[in-house]
Image (cartoon, rainbow, N blue to C red; front, side, top):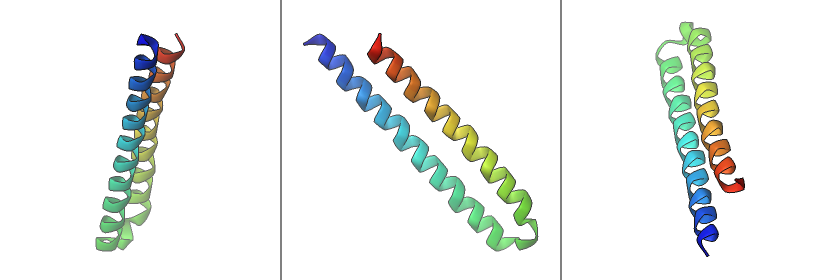
Length: 74
């Protein structure tokens, strides 16, 4: 019974990691579009910063998911 509790809690942890990443990337995209609308001439720099930020956030969420999976499979 105890192992099922750990698996369930790990699944909740993975869900929270994915949810946080989705919300963060959505906020990054929204802010980038607002910035490009205000300063169209700086769109290349803004887009580059947006992609780098989204990649870093995605990497952090992937690290969280891998940690949860390692805890479950151990």
